[in-house]
Image (cartoon, rainbow over all chains, first blue to last red; front, side, top):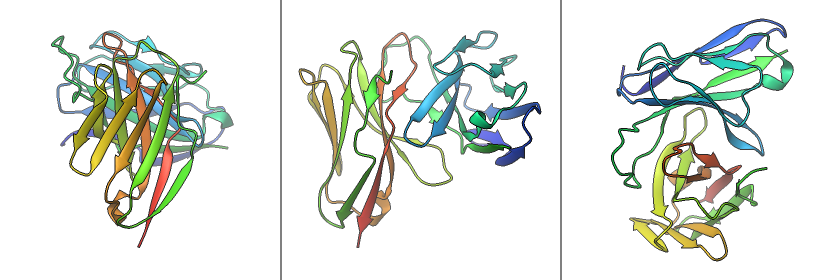
Length: 118
Length: 112
């Protein structure tokens, strides 16, 4: 593995079903993020985790949950999918090591999961 | 309400000419502004950033200009190349928060 991976690549899901999107990074970044991309709205933060064992809510957290049991993995769960959750989901990771932000530090994104809820 | 806005959803430019992408923001406390580039079926990748204490940052063909009084920044690509055809996202960052606020994106098409 090099960088950040997401699975599945795409998924069609019936409304009401439970779904977990997987995200794994091998860069040992302490922070991880989940975004959804929708036309005209850009990337919106769903949930984030600044370090293993902690999580926080982003801009659009309703209907989603996350966990961060270790540094590398950050799964996103839709407990009961609804059509409005049809979107492209991106996982990202970044290094918040506490040093002064340099301006070139950034978040590294996975290739995305295209989810369709019918 | 979105704190970062890209009001032009698309831009078409001829190869070799300049592409100018605009971005406006509402929060004067943002410390850094970043541009990301995204190709279809891929995740966004970092392109260039600028500190709020600077007014210009240049990296090769890419230059970011920041006008703090107007809460406006722009990305200039000179000269534009076919490989620049992508979606460009403007983002803003508060140090200590480390959560990026993204604009809606601008799709750039470079015509041969």
